[in-house]
Length: 613
Image (tube, rainbow, N blue to C red; front, side, top):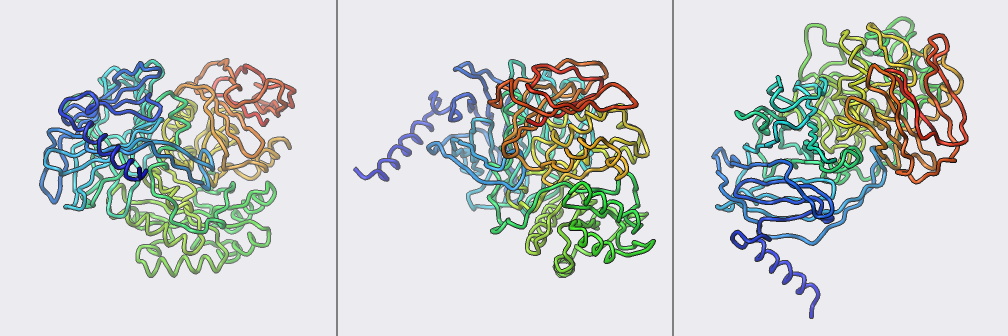
């Protein structure tokens, strides 16, 4: 018999069975490993999770309706009409948690009673993704999707603002004060069951979305950033499983379109020196800029980021002189731009209005390419609106045509563009170290905040926190040196911007300087070894034949932590270099070569460590 015809027959029979009225097979579908189970009841998608056949209900996704061509199409019942055999995907990344990614999923097609809208629903071993479409019959311009979460569950959600620069407090659903939250949102359901909500696959026609409070407590609406019209929505993404599954997942890029840049050989990861943290308006000063170029050369960092107001640089030289100075020292420059869509008056820094029009953008980026500039940092975007999403994508496309890296600040969080446009090497979207420059709030909250970010914001993509400061900016930090060094490993960013002053880095012991000199910013693998949001985290990242294990204490008390190295397949007698805190304010470092990896470490309050194996 023809095998192709046999496959069609099997799939057709499967679709017939799935669509039978009230049959168990019609209402229960599973992930390839059968640990995630979806049960469909009318317009509700009930999500179950559990291993060894012990799946229990965690929460519900409800779809009351979708607006098509400005008319609300109510959904009374979803019917599964087809399924696909298990599909395998694999692809390469230029940054992220691992350079080689793979996953498997089962895909199902659901339709509403009137055949509009339809839904594509994918069940992966580490989560669920779904999106609506019209099958080419009209444009979707709204939805009424609800996430119904049990009120008693703990959650870590960020109060919404356009720049995604807020904290992730631990709360329960009946005690939340905010009514609008940004992605991602993390939930704990007990019994080693967690879920993280976000989205992916934003195209030019889309707006991004966020979560708003529904009338019932602990129920969240998916709310669009602005009016938009498209054949299908972005993917709604639910990463699901243990806390290890959440942190290690690549589901955001798994569902995103593959790279649209044919040749990525020019995209080079690395660390950069960065002037803003110590000198807010320092890029106006040629002499200060050259100090950061010298620092990059001394520490063998490939990049220097010259921040806002470089267009009015003075004190001995201008931007052309600074670029020449950097080139002579084999340091590549990254330049800041104002997106000129949000903050353009009342003290807004420049360059302004150079990227908004396509012809101006093309001319500016061509000029940068000719000048040997390696990339751009673009700041102050106008929220999650459809025009902003279109603008961001056009910036990435134009930058790629001119071999320019891109770093978005004052912008929405990553939603998979790092796969589709791998020249997007970092995104802010985080309450990061620059806030030591701006306000006193971070000083007391930094340790717990830092111990939350690996479970929340950094799960979904590169994060330009600008870590590793040993001295103080306008407002002091009380995290230890070991804690700060650990952030360079814990926080993933394809280009990692080191924020401290040159003299601070160069005053550290030679062993610490050597660590920064050899700091990788891309990883072959990532494993969560231990941790809990806001309390502590221990993570292992692999680069080549070396494992980097880093951990921080997010509390104000001493903390003993275990290091379960069996998760990364090494033995206790592996040699390592250990960087941690001495507890002596006059000589804060304890750096040693150890002949075996310690099973436990004692961390100071707000302390940390790094081991290189």
